[in-house]
Amino acid sequence: DAGVIQSPRHEVTEMGQEVTLRCKPISGHNSLFWYRQTMMRGLELLIYFNNNVPIDDSGMPEDRFSAKMPNASFSTLKIQPSEPRDSAVYFCASSEDRGNTEAFFGQGTRLTVV
Amino acid sequence: RKEVEQDPGPFNVPEGATVAFNCTYSNSASQSFFWYRQDCRKEPKLLMSVYSSGNEDGRFTAQLNRASQYISLLIRDSKLSDSATYLCVVNKANAGGTSYGKLTFGQGTILTVHP
Image 1 (spheres, rainbow over the protein chains, first blue to last red):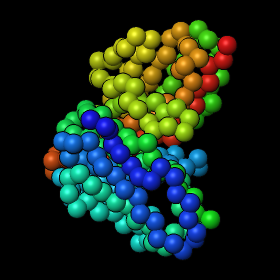
Image 2 (cartoon, rainbow over the protein chains, first blue to last red):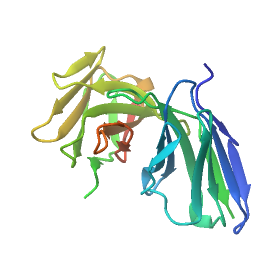
Image 3 (cartoon, rainbow over the protein chains, first blue to last red):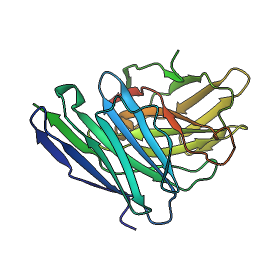
Image 4 (cartoon, chains in turn yellow, cyan):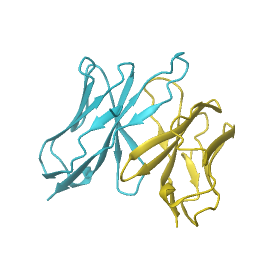
């Protein structure tokens, strides 16, 4: 398997623009996570899905952020409108939904909002 | 209080040294525990799971104290290649016990091993 695939790897956008980050989880994994990492706050869980259903979105910063998982092999994280403070590395991870199982991370999307 | 707390370091140690990292977690319902490693500008990767009885993987030893809600990682005979950020991670089932999803990460402890 190719692992968790994220796109794009880098994104530079202007404030106010819409940004869409994409993720393809590992086949057969039924949990998917979106994390954001910054120097100040570390790794923060934004939202996680189980069997394509959002289970916990309490980490989503505000209404500008939305996430979807239309099927088991694809998820998006959208920011609209983007702001400079959204600049961070966004990671997608997937795992099998059972105890004591590891999460596999994608390589991340480095987002810069100017 | 953060759900998972770690000493951020940085720890600067010479090759061959033994170094220990500590982590505390606040949610007593946490069920699974891990140490992840993250290299600079890379994604986190699993280093090892942490079992109740303690476990060892080569130079790495992990321990769990459920009563104190405390996790540790010991690295013996440090190598230059051990330089990275080490992340303490906890996981618990949801209220219905139907999903083990929510992995919560600590801030990470930065380790630099120098010649």
